[in-house]
Image (cartoon, rainbow, N blue to C red):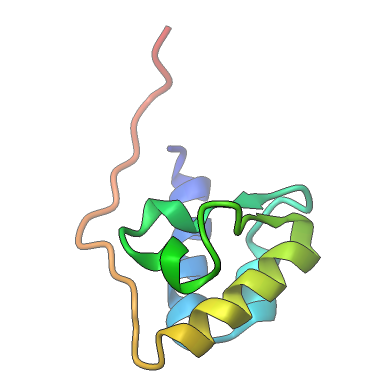
Length: 87
C-alpha cells in the first residue's frame, strides 16, 4: 500500500469505529464492493453470503446492517505497512 492508501485506510477504520458512515464512504471508491464474508460469522447475521454492498449506497446499507447486528463491534489494525509495488 502507498503511504496515501495507508492514511486513507486508517481514516476509514477510525470512522467505522465512530459509526460515521459518511466518513467511511468518503474514503471508499464510488464503485466499492463490500463483502461481509471477510469477517467470520457476519454473513449469517446479514442474510447469507449474498449480502454484498455495491457502490456507496450499497455500502451505506451494509454498514447500517453491520452496526445493527453488532452493537458494540469495533475494528482495529495493530500495524499498518507501506511497501513499494512489486513486479
